[in-house]
Length: 467
Image 1: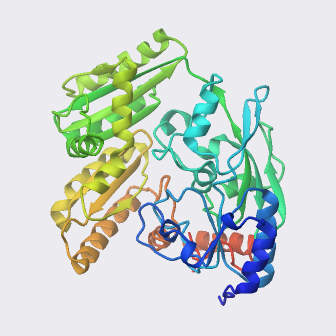
Image 2: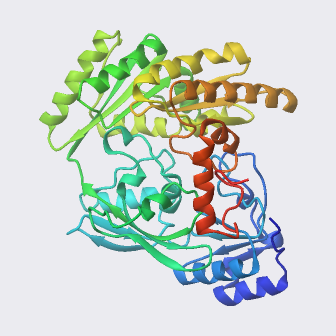
C-alpha cells in the first residue's frame, strides 16, 4: 500500500482542527514513548501525534486522512504488549488519553458512559465509591478503557465474571472515513441484525476508533476474602485447579504463581510477601454479599486444596494483608521485566481442563530450549502468561532460542485446542502465530471484514491478520 507522506500542508490542516499547539506534536517534539508499547520491541515513530479531546476532532482527522490516504494509528496509554499501538507506517497517531470524561452514571439501568481515555483504576474507584462494581480486572490498572475494549482485556476476575466484552453495552465509533456511528446501547438484550458492537470489541483499533463506551455495572459485593495456598510443587498446585472448578464453588479469581516470581516481586516492591517458603502457590479470591456466603465457598475449596497436598491455607482477612498479596500479584510483569535484560511474552489460553498440562509443559521447557522461562497466570480461565528471558544472551542466540521456545509453546497450545491470545491481543508481534493457528478460511473472512470497514487500509495497518 502506498501511503501519503505527511507534509506541512497536512500539519497545518490538523493544527486548524485542533487549534491548540500543545496537543499537536511532530518532529523532535514527539516523545520516545510514542514509538513503542510496554513490551514489544517493535519501534516506529509516527509523523505526528494528535491529542484529541472530542469525537468531532477524531471524525475530522479521520475524514482528512481517508481522503488523502494517510495511515492512522489509535493509541491509549500504550500499555499493550504486542505492538498494536505502534505506528508501523508512521503517519498520524491519535492519542485518546485526554478523552477522559465520565459522561453519565445511570443507576436505573446499571450502566456508566465514559470516554475512551478514562483509566481502568479511575473507573473502578469511581463506581466503587457509589457501591457499584465494574468486574473486568486486567493487571495493568493504568490502561485506558478504550484500550481494554480494543483488546477485550480479561484479568483476574474473568473466571467468575467474564471479560471486557461481557460488560460493553454500547459504543460510539469513528469509522476510517470519518463517519460517526453507534453500535449497541443501554438495552440488555439485542438481536437486531449483526452484532456490530461485539465485532469492535477486540479489534485492536483496526476497524474504527472508539470515542464513547456504555458499560454494564453490577452491585458491589459486600464481602471479599482471599486465600493464599502454598503447595510443595507446581504440579500439585496446578493439578488442583480443575478440581476447584468442578466443585462449583467458583472463586472470583484463581491465580497460580511460583516462588521465583514472588521473590522478583518482593525485590521490585521492596516489601515482603506474606509467605515465600513454598515452591508454588494458588491465590484464590471469593466475594459475595455476606460473610456466611463467602465462608461456605472458601471452606469447600480449602478442603479440596488440603486433600491435594496443600501445605497450609493462609486466609487474607485484613485489608493490609489483602493489599500486600494483590499488589505483589499486580507487580509480577514489571518484576520479571526487572530481573532480566529483555523478555518476550506468550499469552496463550487453553481449555480449563487442560491448564495443568499446559503449565507443566511450560515449566519443563527451559531444559529443552536452554533459556529461562518464568510464568504465572489466570489458572481459573486457562489463560497463561509465560515470559522468555534474554539475560546475557547475544542477539543472535536470543533470537534463535526465543523463537524455539515460542514455537513450542504455541504448538502445544494448538495441540490442546487452545488459542494464541487470551487477553493481550495479536497486534503486530504475534501475527505469524495467529496465521499458523487459524483456519485460512477464517483469516480470509477477517480480512474481508477489515476491507468492508476500511477499504483503503489506513487504520492501524499491519495489525492482527493484515499483510
